[in-house]
Image 1 (cartoon, rainbow, N blue to C red):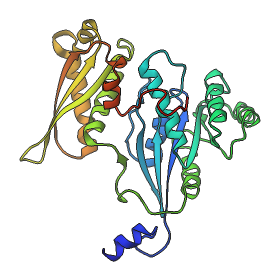
Image 2 (image 1 turned 90 degrees about the vertical axis):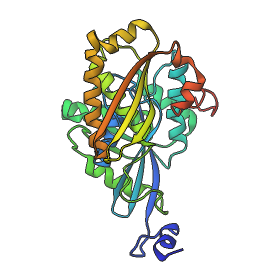
Image 3 (image 1 turned 60 degrees about the horizontal axis):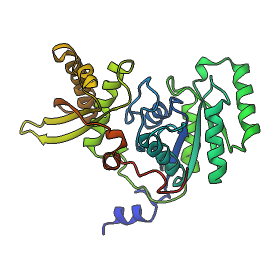
Amino acid sequence: MDESTEQREHGMDATGEGTRCGFVALIGAPNAGKSTLINALVGTKVAIVTPKVQTTRAPLRGIAMVGKSQIILVDTPGIFATRRLLDEAMVEAAWGGAADADVVVFIVDARLGLDDEAQMVIEGLERAKLSAHLVLNKIDLVKRDALLGVAQAFNERFPFGRTFMISALTSDGIDALRTFLAEAVPEGPWLYPEDQVADAPLRQLAAELTREQLYLKLHQELPYASTVETEAWTEQSDGSVRIDQVIYVEREGQKKIVLGKGGATVKQIGQAARREIGAFLDRRVHLFLFVKVREKWSQDPERLRMMGLDMPGKAGRR
């Protein structure tokens, strides 16, 4: 074992000084801004962001480096009232991410205040006996006097450790939150290389980037019954990569929506996704999209497991 490896395993960097590393779970209602915040904290895009609620399905980890601290940010699905197996698995994943984290951050859309969904999350924190810090997001859209009232209402309802007011979109307040998290994670060795920004297979990240474009293009017309899977990843001799993906929907009518007239819609989705994937990989991408019908895939436990979701009730956290 060389000296640098031994230092890393004992929580030391190359200078011999201590390092910090820990998991920070971001929880909250759908569309509170969790994915946007992860991207802002990491400094690059690792989580997909769309106007459609419940975009995040399985926990995704973004990695932020602050000095000698490695912050592993867990972007959890939004917590909401469930109606189907996919919903239940997503909420289960959110609470699982919170229970396993070193630090829990509750993100709130400050415009909505202490509404029913926020109350639901707080009740979950109480049942799980979890401590948490409060982040009021989207402060650029709220008057300061109203913002102070929102912060007071939340802190009277639950004993939050610290309260931060930010705009993940404009990065206002992000530096203070990032600095706090760097000090809040425990001492210990880094778990990832210093230049790694996400913990997910490239095939999964590529599928997520395509799903983002699918939602952005069709979020009004297409229901949640759609998902994207990377079926093949072929390295090319010129350094580029060929990626074959399948967009699954639940009904034939949905397939027609995704394809569009003469295949125009899926072509537009593919062009946008190829740009995003190419920018993330920093290499040329050849993307081929196929659209297939798979009835009731969102009720299929095997499909949910492939997406990284455990079965509801497995952890007993809801």
